[in-house]
Amino acid sequence: MIMRTLFLILTAFSVLSGPHIAARGVDQAIIQPPPAEFEVTFFPVAPYHIGDVLSARVTYTGEADIGGIQITAALADEPDQILETAAFSQNTRQANFYWLYDTQTRLTGFLSFRFEVPDFDLAWTQGVHLLPDPGSRRAAWSVAHSPCCTLHYLTGTDAEADLPGITAALEESSASVLAQFTAAGVLQENPIQEPLSIVLVPIVIGHGGFATNEAVLTYTQDNWAGIDFATLAHHEIVHVVDRLINTQGPRPSIFVEGIAVYFSGGHYRPGDALQRGAALLALDMYLPFSEIVDDFYAAQHEISYMQAAALVAYLDLLWGWEAFIDFYFNLPEGESDSEIISAALQASFGIPLDELEAEFIASLGSLERDPQVEADVRLTVDTYEMLRRYQTLAIPSAHFRTAWWPPVRQMREAGIVGDYAYREKAPVNLVIENLFIEAHAALDANQGTQAETALEKIDEILSRVEDAEGNLTPQATGWPLILHPHRIGRP
Ligand SMILES: [Zn+2]
Image (cartoon, rainbow, N blue to C red; front, side, top):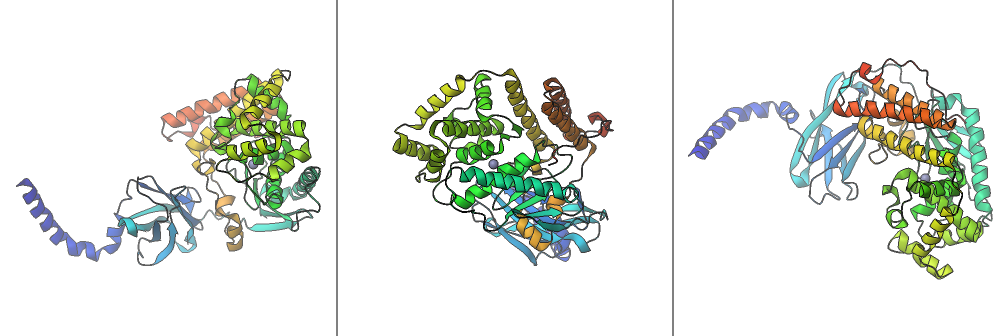
């Protein structure tokens, strides 16, 4: 009876409200709430301004098989004009709408989009608040040429100001990478037929650099990721050259990263690869191969990279560089990286991977302990753990697991800069990033205690950010800043 009464009431309501909704199609669209299992993030990150070319990333958290399912996006007030169609990746369970809408001609206020997943019979609206055009955003892509490299940068950034020094550092890095591979006898001629493409961006994404078919590197005078530009450039150039010359067969991540770290003289911080590996072992931070070889990028980042470099250094010592590169360049296909390496080890040297690991550990254990290196290794790990904690809590678009790094070549071709050019910072960002710069400077000066103090302060602020669910007053973070940021990361 109750159900029947409810049904009648609802029917009466729908009759009354039916024509009303039909007449207000736009409003109807605006009130469709997003389903719980779909999360939309707009980029470039908030706050959004007139002039932004907006992208959207839709993440699916439900149980259904989402791979290949299509999703469309339109403006909510023009729902029939599809702006873009994207498909969900089975892997990431995400669909990306790159540069969906140019807000140049919009007015300030709320801009609403309509998303639709026809296969799931779902549609909803979601949007952003547009603030006025800041009027100061004039960055554009520009390019400089040198013998080794084609250097893409943004006008008005530190990279433009420091161009001569950067060019010199890149020339040096690429020459040294080529010399390092040549030493292994694998290069008959220079594999770089065309200059390497290097892109410099002023914002920190991930740990300050990533490479696809071109290397994208953070370049800013106040680099709170603390990475030495020349080391980072060297690391990423190794990846680019490696991909150019090692085109056959699998390339296990532990070797890919191990070679890059070994060649560039350290990961984040300079240091002898074997000594740092020995420090990890002594500090009980060593990760068994069974935990890192097959899922390298999921392992603790600094430890896995330092260990990878130590392994490559060890094999260089054991076999000689030429034999190691010959081994790495001629690996057989296999189900997993550990299988691939193990099979090759058996075939060439008659030993399985676990035996090699036991010898590797024994060799690291035989090195004399160095308290200075151990402190540096421990603090390096602590610093970057804290950096990722900051990224997770305050700027997830920069954390490597959730990073927003749209295809940079397409952006250059389309003249879009926003995703890499601008990040507005709140006082909490400035305070924390300044403390990171202090921590890095202290580490460089071998002042472990000062580095620890800076990290403790960051930890305290981040805990308050967590407790306040983001609603932290600037004063609670230590604002205003008293210290002038150190300038590091210059070539
Ligand atoms: Zn790398």
